[in-house]
Image (tube, rainbow, N blue to C red; front, side, top):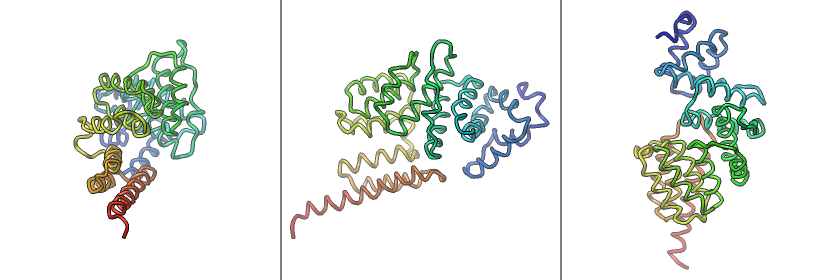
Amino acid sequence: MSVLAGHVTATDDVLAFVRRPPIALPERLAQARKLLSEPRVQPFLEEAVHAPELRQGVLDLARVDVQDAPDNACATRAEQWMLTAQATWQESAAFLADIAWQARRDGRRLADEVSRETSHAVDPITARTRLHLLGLALRYDFRRAALEEAMLAHRGPWDVYSRALFAFALLGQSKARGLELMDEVLAAADDDTKVLHTLLHGLWLGDAVPGRLEHMMSILTRPPFRGRTDAVALFREAGILRETRCFGEALTTIDRALEMLPPGDPGVHDDLVRERALIITARDMYDLVRSGPN
């Protein structure tokens, strides 16, 4: 493994991590932070990220490095990692979605940290990173109009995930152009999971989108969700079943979502618990109306 030559003495623990990161989140974070504190780790990781068999594990470590950055340094550190890794748009979407979600949970104003400069003087990967980060920060704050404005201000070119973020902004405002753009994105996305979730999120918010529930169910039948192991996808499905008054199926689906949810994310857990309460309330109200006055 030539890319690792010269670093062997420093990397036993790092190699063990990047080859098989711990599954449990607390353990994974604790190990990652310990490894990142070692002075020889950074140059090793910057080389190892280009070894295909280590790339995902290195990006897992890099994600912690970005999340733990001081205030006002998170976005810059994310740019550096995406540029070092020469990340694809798919890798960028996956990496930065977790960064933006964690920043929101930590109460950080990530949208304020991201540079709006995406001129031709900025390399394409950095420009894309900035657009993804800004788009994700605005998306997780439900700032759909602000996201639409930010996307329109971008000088391009747009990758597939950037177009998915724009579609989210339009769908979330129930704008007709959103459906057209959604179809274009789906044709180009090769069922990328982050793209599908972004479109589902927009449809979930766009209550006046024509055929909204049918479009959501169509996305939920795509390959990444067929195994019914994605908690957020199951959460969306449970909401559809509630709206169509299939209350028994809705409860079964939200309970499965709770089982599938990885530990360590109270925000998503709270969303699922609220959906379960909504299903029960809607079911009881429907039964009460059907039973009529006593």
